[in-house]
Amino acid sequence: MILTLITSNPTVTGSPDQVNNLLDLLMKGGVIMIPIALLSIISVYLFFERYSYIKNKSAIDNGLVHSIVMELKNGHKDKALIYIQNNHSSIGRILESGLEKVGNPITEIESNIESATNLEITKMEKDTGYLGIIAGIAPMLGFIGTIAGVIKIFYDISLADNISIGIISTGLYQKMICSGTGLFVGVLAYTAYHILQMKIDRYTINLQESLIQFLKAL
Image (cartoon, rainbow, N blue to C red; front, side, top):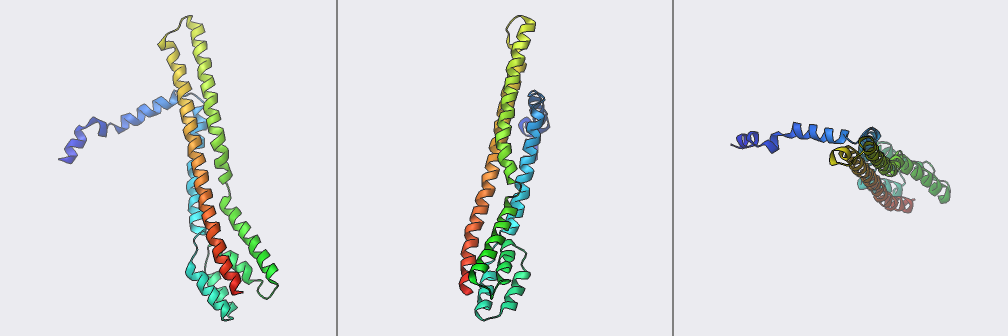
């Protein structure tokens, strides 16, 4: 019964036609739509690639930190180092950099940890700056398309020597489609950039709490 309703409903089965109509509409935006489309693809790729990397590397195992702290309190540095080396997250490498300096002045340990932390944060932020660039460029490209559409309108009017909806419709399509698509891609990239930054900021806060426990144990 449900299958019959779906197959008989043109709004449900019309998806291929809807896709074709959407593509035809976007094509009316002109050549400027090509770089805008490329920027949208790059934005989506960068977001999911960075999100996956940050998610994997920013995991903080509280059990790991607790085990390391307990081993250090019991004077078992070697066991603590084994725990860390079996962990492949960012916090594992950061804590390992601190353990390597155990026995040296605490300032030297803190300096080593700070350097390792900055390196791991930099790795997480890698390529996220491109999202910020795209957020600024995409709307500008849309604006260029808008200007091109206006120029086309006046050019077509000058050739026909009269004003009609048929003459100006092509230019209006180009104008509105480029503006809308450029703004959409810009918002997409802007949102993706700040989602990644918020995830990194949350990790930094949790990392600081774990590092305080670690340094107290030393």
